[in-house]
Image (cartoon, rainbow, N blue to C red):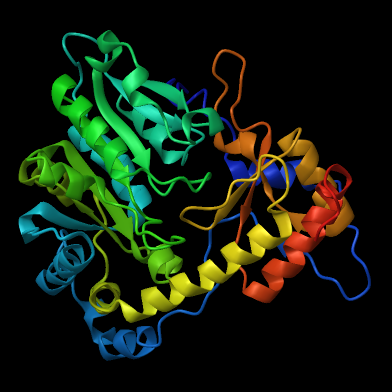
Length: 402
């Protein structure tokens, strides 16, 4: 049997790879201690109170086929949130619902990436490290994935403007995540204006992954779609967001895409053939969530407390960078795999080696010297975990302040 070559060079996914790495290690825990898993970005704060009642009230609608692009009431709720949060006036035909952002980030490439760009094989720009679906989408459309370092030297965001104009001329899509997963860096207005200008000059689309946009330290991150709209170039951006992080509803699998009419029309067309619409009870809960900002504000405050805990415990570690947005610590270590093994063996803490979120480029992996730590547990558990982590990895290289 012959299998496609386009996915043959995909590495094993991060979490099975981590399980294999740690499989022969027994965690060393003191009496009364329990393992702490800080690997996956799965929020553990409470769901909003309205989820159960709304789901119960709409349970009978599981008996109906739902609108593929989203119920009108849900699209109106998303448009209302975009107006309140970003000052955008987005009509329903510029929106569509998604089974979480991963579906949209993948299928948008299928719907919108051309077979050739200026007579050449198209290129897709991918930050490195990155959310792994970006690279799989590039492979699926037979494009060249170009991995751009997003490191402390570049402000933990890719330097698109430094690319050769000849490369930019064959770019079809540039992925961007802000706040960044895993580094927590945020793209400011000047950065986004420069990227939108490049996209217009070289005729490519920006896929703006904004699923961490409602978790931040002080200043709300701007939306690439809002910046492009201000510049009169809204068609250059497709933005993606979801309720997973904002509303602590990762299992709801509810997100949306917003962009230009032509782009969304193409995405809707593909989804009508190959997509799975969200069940109507899920859409009703989603409508309630996008219509309510109070629970998102309360959720953000919980993360801000944990930012302060991380700064207090880890702030004097060389290379430590406070989180601007999102809920991941991107901590410097000599070797991410070795650090992950040491933490599991000596403290019963699971973290993700940074190399599992990155790709080797010219023999260098920009995530190798980092671990990703998800601050998804409550404040007390976070303090305990970070105190253990510091004692194992860092106390011998600092002044011992805890």
